[in-house]
Amino acid sequence: MISRSELLAAAEAIRAGELVAFPTETVYGLGANALDPEAVARIYEAKGRPASSPLIVHVASVEQARELAADWPDSAQKLAELFWPGPLTLVVHKNPIIPDRLTGGLDTVGLRMPANTIALALIREAGVPLAAPSANRFTELSPTTAQHVRESLGDRVALILDGGPTDVGIESTVLAVSPPCLLRPGSITREQIESVIGPISVDASDQIGRSPGQHARHYQPRTRLVLARANELPAGRGAYLFVSVPGKAAQPIHMPADARAYAQRLYALLHELDAQNLDWIAVEPPPEGSEWDGIRDRLRRASAV
Image (tube, rainbow, N blue to C red; front, side, top):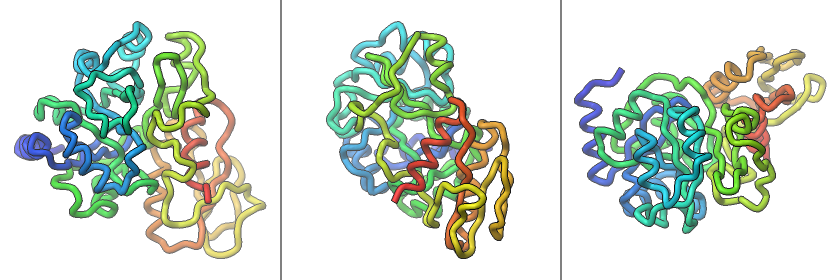
């Protein structure tokens, strides 16, 4: 657990326009004052992120989220009451106080309240909402520990708050609220959302750019990652992540059959394997079911060429 002095130093750095990496329940975020265009620009520079890719804003309460929204539909309120704090980002029309730089020029903004005590304490102590994409270079593997952040961003960050490994392990579900459309799957499933607000669209082909993580290549380790069955493994030295059927790779790694446990382990394991100078990492295609949609999405983009 971080000390009070570390938290105060991080909050002061945020107010001064600097970048602070901090844990959330999903992955580590690269935080800056969401209301400061220059600080937001530093996030894009540090990550090498294109200006067209919007950032998610992290808040410490539903009330703070409402202040950042031009409108807050009943559906947003119902979802926030049920799933916040937690790994659900709601895309709503933005209040003009949100810089256009943060949203890629869009009139919408993604808002979420993280389920992590350090993240919430930092937002409250800083006194401002935090723009915070994952704390890594653009398109690379997201960090689930403070060490992952150090290895990816180095001295591009003023401070790193070390809260230990993250709990969820993959990025949040992103939902455009009006009209309701699932922009990025995650651990909060389509069925869970529909149980609250009714049917939602999952065809986001006309929504590209409204959410992070929609580039064809994303979440990629340095080592080549392929989706393959046990009898389709590449030649050379590699590792094979499987749920059902082991392969003959040098490193067959049995993954959890539970989607939440699988997600929690996935990125941390890929970071470990990335350090082994393998020729490839192969992953058995995940099982069917909406609880696996977020994992399936991340692996599809991680294996894109």
